[in-house]
Image (cartoon, rainbow, N blue to C red; front, side, top):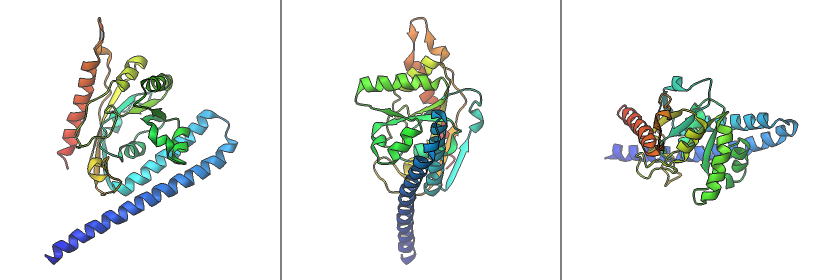
Amino acid sequence: MVLSVAKSLLKVLKIFFVTLLFWFVNISLVIFYWLVLSVSLIFVFSKRTRISLYQKAAKSWGKILSAIAAPRMSVMGLENIPKDKPVIYTPNHQGNLDWMILLAILPLPFRFVIKKELFKIPLFGNIIKGAGYFSLDREAKRKAYDTLVNVIEIARKESVVIFPEGTRTWDGKVGEFKRGGFLLAFEVGNPIIPVAISGSFDIMPRYTWIIKPGEVRVKIGPPISLEEFREERGINYRKAIEKVRGVVETMLSEIEHKH
């Protein structure tokens, strides 16, 4: 009885400590990177170089925070990412940690398409804007269309990460995929790289900012060409979405069963 209570207390203390550490380091890093970049970029005139520096800072931020929240992380399939052409990553969206995990593991350069609310966070919003990430307004269709037009231009040269579910899951399962990433893929002709993330739902789901440190597994699938879904009557988005979603679900099931 006493031992059980002691174990429970230690678990609560660990969660409290890791949560405190995570947010302290998070805020400290944002302030540090913002100050360093604000000063150093006075002397950098190339837009491409500026974006590259911001992206490297964001990647470092993601690596450090992922290491705190998910001290045990395994990644499979990095060899499936082409080195000579841009792609469109379509990861499932389990929780708040997902894009930090992706920042930590995916090779630069790449851009995120993320919700507009993140750009309103003081200092942090400046960093992700500087990194060239795209703000997605899910409620304003016209603004969402304008964002897509801008993403198309970049996607011809750089890889892009889009969460096809459009939001974080409530139950850890893969939700319905939206068309946005597929419209982009068909327009620019880039292959899709399916990504399955397992474990982040248990660490920090959408409804909490408390960190329960644990294990994360990520599987990156081979490139998927969508050309077979161009039919005489037009593009079959439904079949393309079903194909990619099915691959993500299968990969997720595989890595979940390894826990």
